[in-house]
Amino acid sequence: MNATTIDRVKALLDISSSSYDAVLTTMVAAATRRIENYIDRPLEAKERTETYPIRPRQDVLFLRAYPVTAVASIKLALDWDFATATAVNSSDYKFDAETGMVNFLYYPINNWKGNNLATAPNVMQVVYTAGFAADTAALISAYGDITYAADVQTVAMWRRRDSPQGASMNVGGASINYEKPLALVPDVIEALTPYRRLRFAANG
Image (tube, rainbow, N blue to C red; front, side, top):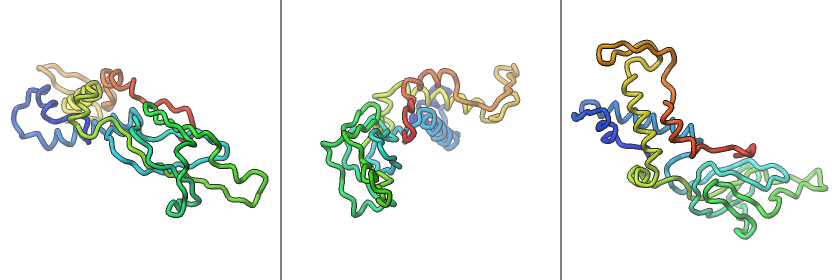
């Protein structure tokens, strides 16, 4: 799922033809991936099945995607053998929809205590639904600032398409020199900062 559309970008660039649609489609997709990398979580809302390592006495887990709509199941298993694993009772954990944090009301790994020969579960599978929006139109409607960031970054990429690694660019008869490759532009960073993941745990 892209964070914006090429029609929005073309309007900003005053491009009316379809001659550059393929290039702009590639740039919009690239800008979307950079946004997801910067905020450290995916944009698309969908059901996800993910695995996480878990340590003894760990009772907090940070999911990779959020906001979280629902947690379908959580399983602990040895060596990714989830087919025979029993799901954790939903009354034994709580999750924060806005941060993707799962808090267990007990220590999921405790069978190692007092028995050096016992093998504890070392991986957790979480099936859950999370993300900002199901499609680009819904993202535009609900998270205009994220879409704005994608618009601005794509426009910047377009204007630097002949010299993405630096050098110079002619604008209105004047030459502008660039010393560095194009990074996220300041307006984009400002728009995305409120959505950026803050890491508080090693597994998050």
